[in-house]
Structures are given as C-alpha cells and as structure tokens.
Amino acid sequence: MREFIKAICFIGGCLFFIPFMVVYVGGYQNENLLQEINSVSQTQSAQKNTSDFIQEEQIIGILAKEIPYTYEYEAIKAQAVVIRTYMARRILGIQNKGELIGYSLEEMQDLWGESFNNIYATYQDAVKETQNEIILYDSEPIEALYHRANGGKTRSAHEIYNVEVPYLISVMSEKNPVTKQVEMSKHEMSNKLREVYSDLIVDEKTLENQIQIVEKDEAEYIKSIQIGNRVIKGEEFRKIIGLPSSNFKIFNHGETLIFDVKGAGSGVGLSQNGANELAKEGKKYHEIIKHYYTDIIIQNYIHKK
Image 1 (cartoon, rainbow, N blue to C red):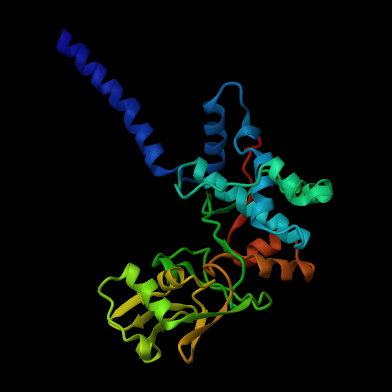
Image 2 (tube, helix red, strand yellow):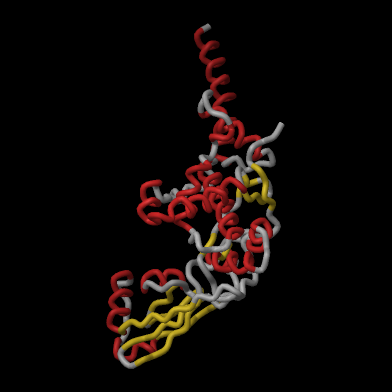
C-alpha cells in the first residue's frame, strides 16, 4: 500500500513539475504570449492587476537617461516603446542581460533645475502616449537593440553576433552622421592590446605596417583586423582601444595613429540619431520603429478580453 501511495505521489509530482519546467525554460516563446504576460502578472500577487506588470513610471527615468530631451518627440516615443520591449523580455525570462537603470526623480531635478517640470513632462507624455505598447516578432518581444548613430547603414545581427535574427537586418540610415577622430600614440595602443593579448608581437616603431583590415561587413564596419601576429574581432578591438564604433579608417601620423570613426555604438537595430532625422521628416514613432526592425508588429501587451 505504501509503495502504491509513493507511486501515485511521484506521478502527480511529475505531472505538475514537467509542464512547469517546459513553460519556464521555454521562456514563454509561444503564440499566446500576450495572454502569458497577462497571467504572469496576475499570479505574482493577488493584489496586482495587469497594469502592474511593467511599471510605466519607471520607464520615464530610463528614457531620460537613454535619449536627450532635445530630440524630436516622435523619436522619444519610439525609444519609449523600445525600452518597454526590453523590460518585457527580462520579466519573461527570455533574456538575462543587465537591467536598464534610469535616473531617479531627485537626479532629474538636480540635472534640469528650473526646467525640470517641462522636460519631465516631455518624457512622461511619451510614455503615456505609447502606454503598454511593445514590439513583437512571431508573438515574442524582440531583442530591441539600439545605438546612437551609424555610418549610413545599420548592421545585421548576423554580422556581429553570428546569429540570424530576421528583424535585425541591415537597413539604410543615411541621415544620422556622427564622426569623430581619435588620436593615439603607437606605444599606448600597443600597451592596451598587450594587456589583453600577452602573446602579441608588434614593433611599435612601424606599427602602421603591421595593421591590416581583414574583413568588413556590408555597412562598412570592421569585422576583423590583424595587428602583428593577432587577428582580432572588430568589436573587441574598438572596445580595447576605446573607439565609439568599429566603423573606422586608420591613418599614420608620425608617432601616433589617427582613427577616423563613423557612428557610435554597435550599429545594430534602431539608430537614435536616425530616428530623430526621420521624425524631422514627419515620420511617426511606429513608422520609425518599423523602419529599423523588419516585419515586426507593435501591440499592446495587456490582453483585452
């Protein structure tokens, strides 16, 4: 009899635990995503309703930190939807990347002084006018990557992450130029690289002759570069050296090298400067979002009965 009871308990436990693990590990990647978001928020606390799932007020401080208030209003609204989508992915456990930390109310008051009320209202209205909207592809919140500017074209996710992401493909983004020249001594550059690659072999005096661009992507970002005996990924190189982006050309200038850099950030996803330029042309926030993320839909995450 005891063995029979044990068997019944074991089978019952499996029937509960296995479906739970399937849902949890699966990251809610199914066609009923909006309903799943709704049910998750309800089960977290009997006191809460679906409007508590993402704290809309929290988005204001993040928005203020991520995009200047001087940008066009429709570009700010587009960024609000991007941030909310990022938060939805984290809450659902689809991704575990770092949490976006925004300004506190006190920080915003100190930062803007007498202009606080007007500036805060801009961000607050952008959040309200896009309330509950997130970006979906195949019924799942997208990986809403964004950057400050690029060299005239965004990058596809495959070029940088070696993963095909159908909504993160290269698109034109001509009107968002950000260029910067970075000058660095050959000695400093060699030292920065040796801190990461102890086996690096270079002659500092003729460093310019030991640099070769191995591969670029279709947006002109450097995918790999050879320095002496090492081949380094473009994104790794630009982070080690401290360049705004991996879209650059190198010029020799005596004992220094000059990097002529286009863009700022990874170049993948929405360009904030590009969004600003599209907004100046009269594009609305949903048009801006659909320009940078291919074949997506924008939908309210609250399931309406």
